Length: 499
Ligand code: NAD
Image 1: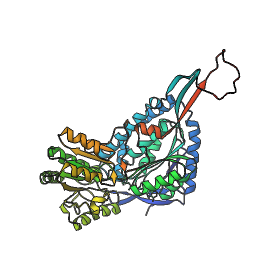
Image 2: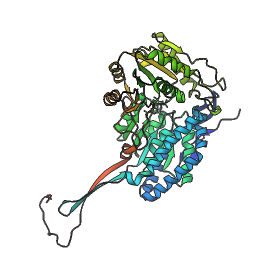
Image 3: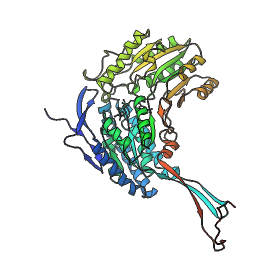
Image 4: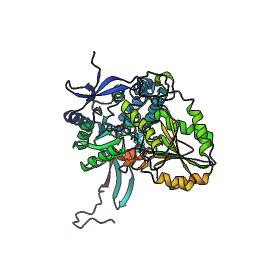
């Protein structure tokens, strides 16, 4: 049997893999087959990656903004031209359908475009004559090596929430992608090289907890941007801050859609399908709970079921609507929540297990599943499922629905569906969630705004991209200046006073 290829690291502008490297399997989830191995970095390899990134930073920080943005523009153009290649890689290792992979690239590209305007984003302030003969101004400077640790569900977009701004601001980055699908990060590395980015400014280390821990504790890592499940986000935040790093750690989610009785139920049903089953529910902004304010639940469920019957599940390269789950273990975990819900008294309206698919039968399939009357005490309600399982919870009033959402542990995204502007306004004002849609099911903010939730969905106070991203990757200095004119008053040993 021929050995499977190993996905290397990317250090100093070249592929690197040790002969005796530990490795982990990378699957094509639609074929249910291992196709590659991911190298898992040792502490020594991470140390080398960070040292080379730090050396590159010392030069890159002094490259002019004009030269930096010229490289960013080139990167943007190459990405736009060649995004089809990247989408194929994402679909091959993640399973999401090609259109969805192109969608995540487009959202990442938006951040690259935002970072192309870094000269404006870095503008400081200047106040003249704050004291007689004194001026003050502020600047924002890069902070050093930025570590970016990303999850499996957006192999391109999530790293792109961070690295364009970090690099544009004069930092170097070390990306540690999910070991489940690391090829996208390496493809992006080659694109940066083609765009003219100096070696070492964009580095990739593949790995698991060993690599993460080495980054969190390395003295030359200045910041950590993490996205993943809540327990790991909390661990990363606590460990990173204890070691003096700036940390932003985005965690898991359980997003509710509140449906008021006056809502357009066709729009709601379409939105529930798109937001519940797009990317097989493996999105941190997926809707996982429809909170139906009675009497709409029965009519809404009928409309959702009608649409579910039309969904084509199968290999994402074959023009299907929904692909497989990322691994067999994850598929089995997601499917186990169907039994948990049923055991707790929920009605399984549509069961996605054993569904017929347009794809290899060995793939990690689970069809769209709909659960009704899910008790809020059930683990199927309280825990993040992260798969194509949509739950309906019935409530009697707006207030009951709002309270339910606010009692949840997570606070990533939510949506309200209504034609009542007053109800929508109250919802956006009172709901304890970071990203809110009004008749919009997946309210992912554009790049100029910042992405991030509340409560257990984020650790640290800074969100991704937009103003908060620029602030995270820079440190501010305030500089007070006096230039003596020929009429200065000579020696004065008194304590300086503002006059
Ligand atoms: P995960 O937490 O398993 O992995 C995320 C990263 O942490 C990976 O790079 C992984 O290698 C690393 N990691 C895993 N175990 C670790 C450990 N014990 N110690 C240190 N590092 C470890 O998450 P996942 O399964 O890859 O991604 C899905 C999760 O990500 C979901 O919970 C989803 O909600 C969340 N997510 C959140 C957002 C957001 O913006 N809030 C966005 C995307 C995904």
